[in-house]
Image (tube, rainbow, N blue to C red):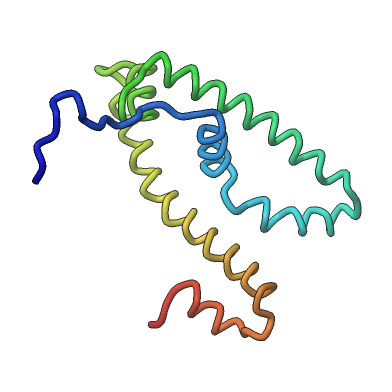
Length: 145
């Protein structure tokens, strides 16, 4: 091992740029949903007016991102929403229960999000490789049993 000078230490950059923050928020809020539902909404509504809902959703996402940015700068701790809920509802009252329930719902939502991503991947894989049948796509997404 080489001896490193005392001033030559690496530190974790705890900042996030605009592009990283926006992509993280969009992936967290939206996920694979638009890729699965936009074709259905366009087919059901019969025109481009279905995109109005997605534009309004984008404005709502912007507002949500601004709220999270404000909370993150006001309470800069690891564990974000857990600490926000604990602070908002009080450590000695409802805050402990609500922040605990937030963690449990995260454990339930995580696998559902991954499953939705697998469904979206399977649907898009059928466009890339149309000769694959449903059982073959399931094997690609979930792996051999």
